[in-house]
Length: 187
Image 1 (cartoon, rainbow, N blue to C red):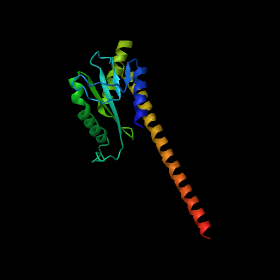
Image 2: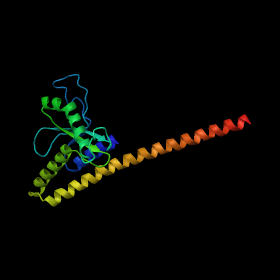
Image 3: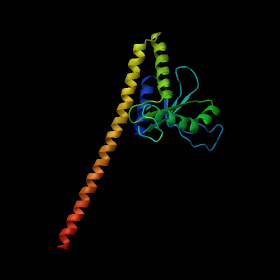
Image 4: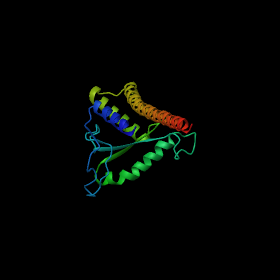
């Protein structure tokens, strides 16, 4: 599920004209030579002209232990963002790289950091191309991004359910065959 999500995000950023690397190596080795952490995505040329941006994605279940209040479903992705910032934030800062946690839930919530990055890059690209930024265009492009991300998560979840169901059926069939063969041999 994670890999499908990451590939979808890479495809979306590339379709927008950004130079994107998948799982870049040695991102934090300037200050820590033996640092083997590999974030999921590197945007080399963000439209704001700022530092390169490193993105690390995660998907959390809607009923994660981080969800302590049913009225705040966003809580799960916010907690996960904080964990990612703890893992990569300081190293990114030391290497003059902007870090963006990309936290999603299996029910469709998107973390504020990745949402803001998407919106920022959409606005800057529209300003570059059209000279003006219309809210309707930004909303339309963002909805397109959300649909692709949701589809990637749903596709992966469906495959996982299908695989688990197939394993359960095969196990039941195997158990029944063993039971049938042991019953017939004892007669």
